[in-house]
Length: 415
Figure (tube, rainbow, N blue to C red):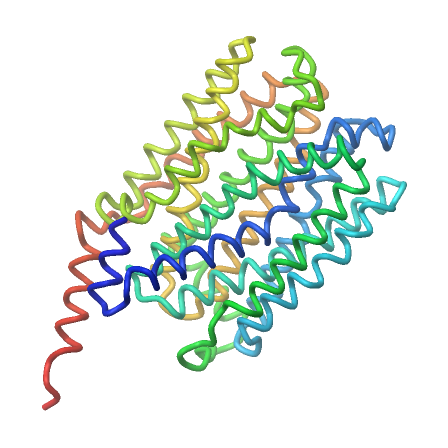
């Protein structure tokens, strides 16, 4: 990939860049696997808890509420938290509510534990994004962010497949215990493999409120935050409530539902390209094209035949992950100070969008079914499109040029 070459130009060996990207992707995978695995179990959870699909769908996605709160909290204390320790401790603590999800017997307790999961997932997520933006220069950060989002894609695919497979073989409780073990594995890997910061964490110039106000006054960042809201609104709405469409009208057996999520395989190959594509064409162009791709995928789901619906879901998955990679990278590049606060705000908007999507679209699904959900999701994307103009295109190869200028400045003799 292009960012491997750029790493070599900065003096990094290609294998070091590959190693860093692999570590980032694996930790991302083990951080967010709990978020998506439970979504694939929604039909079984509705039966096990004898709950309304809309209520259970909201409970399953209640983790996004914890994530929204956690994003702001971590941003508040970011200058006092050691990145490495914060990441591995968050993942270790994540295993606790994950384990107890296997023993609760009420929807209320399930919801509370999902919120706690969200708190620890977002803490690890926010600190990892901040660590990457602090440790990498603008070009390397793009590649590292793409690796992180690729791990996110893998957690969507393998988390859902694993959840359904484990539930079929060891029961619902065993499925959650498998995920708890994976959380502990993530904590161990973060402790063993994440390196220390090269420098001390940048100190915040003012209070957290001042940092948040500063970022919210920035038109481009405001637009990115709002777009993050829509991205997860769309993603949660589609991949939560399409389960009922698949197992209902399209006749997919619940035990085979995990295989449906092979639709995320294309995104595993397209998402790592996001950093290179954005660096060449700019976030505005990339985001517009990705949004149009998602729209096309949604229209395919209106065809009541399994294969077009699966093709549509594959397109939606690839498009939303590309949008997410472009948006997170844009926030990291645009916020030149108090990056933890900027990342925290972005993730708060992002996960709030998921929570709103789970609740609002659950009501829409009860009234109008899948097609009503798809129409609302399409409306949200169209409403978001005017915001894309705020993502200023840096122009072709601006990041390589910037890198070259940086390298030239570093090699100039001191005067």
